Image 1 (cartoon, rainbow, N blue to C red):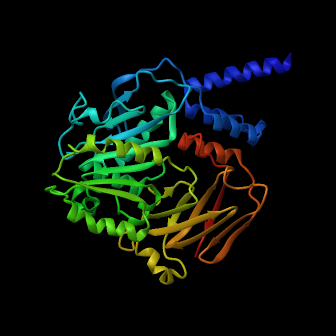
Image 2: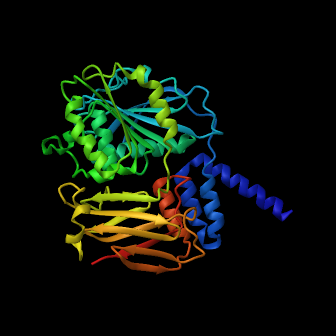
Image 3: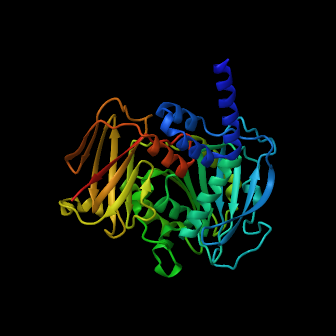
Amino acid sequence: MLDALTRTLTLHRALLIGAMGWSALAVTAAAQAPDDSFAATYARLRSGPVHSRDVPTGRLEHTRTNENGLVHRYVLIVPDDYDPARPYPVAFYLHGGVSRADPGPGGTWWRNYDDVIGHDRIAVVPASWNESLWWQASQVENLRGILSDLKRTYNVDENRVYAFGSSDGGTGVYFLGFKDTTPWAALLPFIGDPRVLLNAQIGVDGDVHLANLINKPLFIVNGETDRLYPVRQILPFLGALENVGADFEFTAKPGGHDTRWWPEEAENIERFIADHPRDPHPDRVMWATERTERYNRAHWVVIDEVGPIAGDSARAGLASITSGGLGGIVDARREGNTVTLRAHAVRRFTLLLSPEEFDLASPVRVIANGETVFDGMVRPDVAVLTKWARRDEDRTMLYAAEVSVELR
C-alpha cells in the first residue's frame, strides 16, 4: 500500500512539474538532491517535463522582454495538429533590413510567410530593428529566451533547432555560428555575407572567429548578380571555410538580392535539415573567444580565462584561425574517457562530462598541449547536473560532472 501511495505521489509530482515547465523540473530536482540518488535525478531530467495538449496553435504573435527591459516581438507558427506526445523541430527565420525603426506589431518584418509555413515544425519569426540587431547580445539573449519559452509550452526536439536567415538575417545566422553555436543543429544563411561583421561601424558585439564555424553544418545560398553580396565576393570566404574543415553546402542562384528561388530549393533545404540533426555531445569541439562573460562555451567546452600561456608561439597556426590572433582557442577531441586538446592563449577551461559519453566508473584523462593535466576518477554530482539542466533546459544534453583545468 505504501508503494502504491508513493507511485501515486510520484506521478502527481511529475505531472505538476511538467505543467510548470523545464526550469521548475530542474529546480525541483535540485531541491530533492540531498536525499535522492544521482541516477534518479538524472532519469527525471532525462525524461523532461510533461507537456499539455491544451496550448495555442496556428499563427500567434508574442512579445518577450530582455533583462534590460527591451521588448522584442516575434511571430510563432505552431502546426494546427500539434501533438504533445512527440517532439517537434523548430526553425528560426531571421529577416533582413534591420537598420529600420521598430516595425511594430503585425509580423510585417518577414515578407513571405509561404516560405516558412506548411512544414511539420514550429516556426519562429523574430523581429530585429535598429535598437537590437542580429549581431548584438540583445538578440542572442532574445533568441535564447524565445527557445526557452517554447520548451516550457511545447514539446521541442532539442536536436532539431535550425537558424535560417535572409540578407541581414543571413549575416545574423553567421553571427550565431561565430558566437553561440550550442543550441543550433544547422545554420542556413541566405544572401548574407559574414564580412559585414568585420565592420566596426555596425555595432557587432565582439570579434568573429572563423574556426567556430566548424561546429555546425551550413547551407549557404547567394545570388550571382546580387548587388550587395554577389557570388564572386563570397568565394574567398568559402575557400576559408574549406581550409578550416567546415561542413557546408553552397548554391549559387541566378538573380540578385532576393529569395525568389526559395521554392526551387525547398526540396534541397528539407533534405539538408533532415540529414543534419544536432549531435548534443560532438566528439570534437573547436571554440575561440576573446571574452569569458559570454560567448565562451561550445557544448561541453567552456573557456574560463584567456591569456598567454607557455608554448603559444609553437601553436601560432591554431591562433591564425581566430580573429587576427585575438582571444584564445581550444581544439578538443574526445575518444572514450580521454580528451586530447590543443589550446592557445587559454589559461583556464572547464570540460562538462556527459554520462552518455564518459564511463564515470573509470578514470578520466585530459591531455592539453601534449601534457597530462588531469587523470583520475570523477564523481557524478547532482549539483552539477541540475545547474546545467537549469541553464540548457535540454533533455539530451545533461552533464554529470565538471573537470576544471588551469594552464600556464
